[in-house]
Length: 246
Image 1 (cartoon, rainbow, N blue to C red):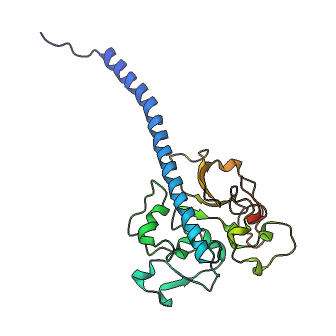
Image 2: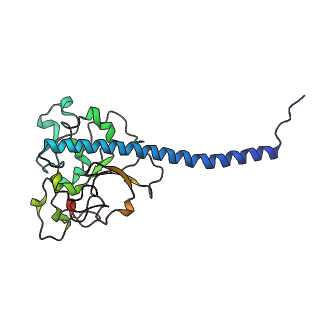
Image 3: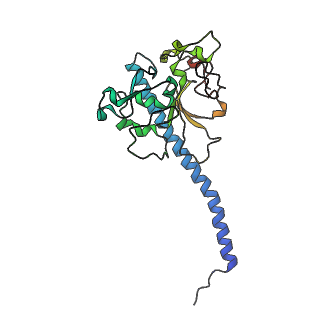
């Protein structure tokens, strides 16, 4: 007995059902992918919190900082290229630490073991990851470091005049709301297809990593020493490290 083939109507119905299934499954798969990416990013930030803690222990309780134009920063592991001054760069202004903070971590978190965990899930960078480009606005990893930690809180307040002497290391103990002040965040979120309203992975000073919506962050204020562009959340927090982001 010959089997009967699909009629045109049956074929169209089958295609329609398949389309409905895809319409249900694809968003669910995308959501699962985003959730997995966010979880991995939070784990990366948690580990970064440990790295920052170790940095503080080795640097008199201070947050990461470099003297602009003076400290020599290496764009590759010094043990691979050597530590002589011809292999490093001196960077100014200090605000570029937002992107260049990994160059302060060679002795605390060696790049060969840690660098890849500083890249957001779904990143498209290809090894070798170094030597890295150095410049203002050049992000070498996915996680940005808050500029609030490289200057006096007065820079983001109305408290008197400010000058270059207000650019200085900040002690972790100076942070008045460690569970509410963001120190690092996932600036790229490569695991997302759309980013407008999705919550962002954040690291707080107390070491907690969580997802928060940018729209709920404290409104930023002007950085009185660096009036370039608009004030930015997590960087230009009112009262700097004395303030809070959530």
